[in-house]
Amino acid sequence: MASVENPGGPESKDQEAAADDPPVDKYNVEAAEALASEVLRLPIVEAVPIYEQLLGVFPTCAKYWKQYVEAHMAANNDDATRLIFSRCLLNCLQVPLWSLFLLPCFSVSNI
Image (tube, rainbow, N blue to C red; front, side, top):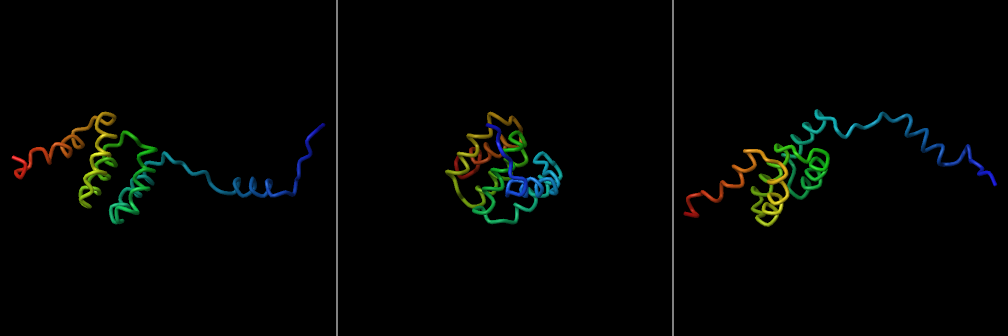
């Protein structure tokens, strides 16, 4: 039995709307940079999902990892900071990340 399409149904309206919208490029570096700049001004609770989104698309971008860690460090959230370091250090071998990780190890208060 042949399937019958509904030419005036809701599916065709959704397809038409999707065809009218310009495609969104999730790998747009300029848009990601703008978003990363904006997220610096947000409270950590609002910033976390945005950082996760950025890092889901750009998992080896040390700049975004560093911003994410620094935001949690500024909020004195040690558990989240350790968790983020455990996620990024071995996957993103960048000196700025490792320097930030080692900074507390060499602080004067720990000696």
